[in-house]
Length: 89
Image (tube, rainbow, N blue to C red; front, side, top):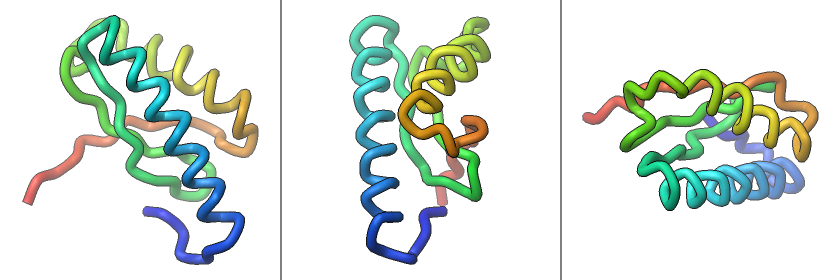
């Protein structure tokens, strides 16, 4: 899902992935769930959710309110955050 263009684009993805890892550390510590960076398609950040996040009734508020809101503060070009089910081979 990530761009192959290199240069600043890769740095952008590295910074975005680092932010998601920081948010996930909080979620893991205090809520027993996790969020993992998958990549960016256009202006949409793709993530997968794990642990206690799966099936949680507060997931929409956490994903779109807290995670998306935080991401948009640092990366205003991201229009939304989408949770994707990660498929195993």
